[in-house]
Image 1 (tube, one colour):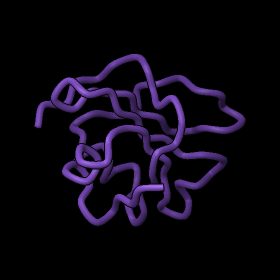
Image 2 (cartoon, rainbow, N blue to C red):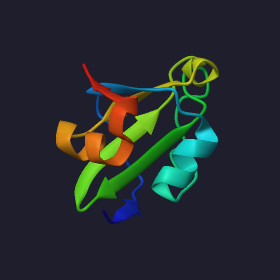
Image 3 (cartoon, helix red, strand yellow):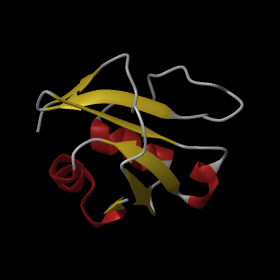
Length: 89
């Protein structure tokens, strides 16, 4: 799957990642967080396309401390990227 960084995060939460750290997400996406978000709510945010489909991953109010992240994108794409760490909302 081809991952390309874009300057646009998720529009809204379509699912959750559990059991991953920032370091593991960086490795899975082959990129570091690249979206500047509201610092009072989000510390880490990735915006990218996966085979041309826009997706996003972000923590919300410190959720990264519990290895939990919000995600945006199609179920099939997110499941292919993150496997059993991904759960659809």
